[in-house]
Length: 205
Image 1 (cartoon, rainbow, N blue to C red):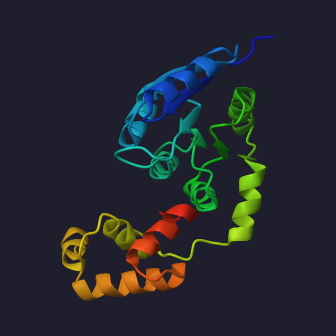
Image 2: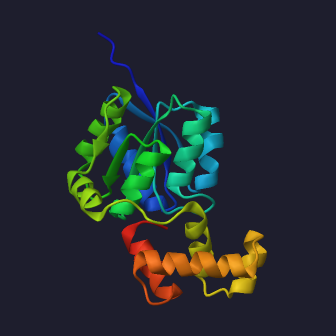
């Protein structure tokens, strides 16, 4: 009986990690890495060109995050199964990844055999979630920030003043101030810098 080969797209901005994953997956008889990219905004074009069955996406990438790239893949190529593989095992990332359409969420220190099996499982229509992260996500509760609050808080992360954030996001300064104030309150922070730190630690940014 012929075993079907699973076509995999790898996206990770760290070349050593990406190549190591490609090598490990390439040792499996039924898995072939058909494309590798280093940026989140290259994922969709690579998927269109190479028609993978499964996309393995890191979260922290230039251009687009893995979660943003997953949402675009889900919207335009829903037949591609999505596995998020990340160093950052944060509950908020897990929740956002699932909302973006990912079928699996694993941390990079998982055994290679577990990653290969996750690729096979999502192709069978199963979901694969790191159990420790799943428990933490349930304990942590939902992300309290709205999309706009998250966007404004992210823009404030580099120390930009309200006027600069307002120009960048095409908002009024008063609106920016209100969003930041609400984000600070929701995160339980004392100021915007602390709100950014807390939101990042939770995986909400």
